[in-house]
Length: 220
Image (cartoon, rainbow, N blue to C red):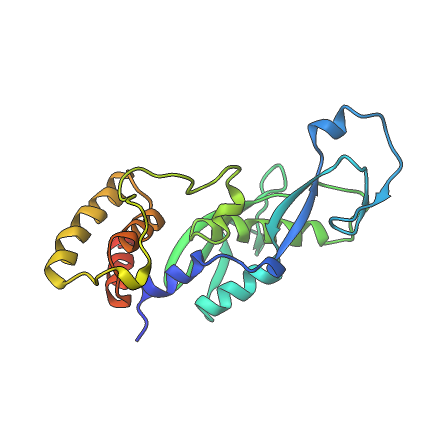
């Protein structure tokens, strides 16, 4: 039977390239340019200023698909209600609670107002933004929110990698001793969970059961 921790780990799985879209945003370079006629973009297929920036993002459908894969009974609710409806704040933003596998985390969404949007479309955009923000607290598309290399080069546990076929599996005593050290580094913030798994695999053959043990202990 799959445990709660094992299910939540699935939230951190990378999204496939076809699930990642391009969000058009104004850039410093674009703001310093004189007004220009909109052109068809060969990156996103839209029509906009040629100096606009493109950000990778996971859309509402792809995120919903991930949530359903992890927990078909996932739910969300607004933090506050007004007249029986979700209460938006003074700027039109919305705080929500997202519950996945029995764990609840908060998120916030907002969207730019526009006179060209259809009635209700901004509210739906805000909800989608809030869901992405809350899902990020579970690790969904975390690397897309980070502007740099999230797990670039981390200290410790970095011996030269060996071909997996040459590595010996960890015996029970060795694994128990080393896993306590690894978990301590995760708790201290010295190493991330991904760095520990990667480092452990470079030193020995990490069995599936051992990897699950590390994941469960780290997420408690």
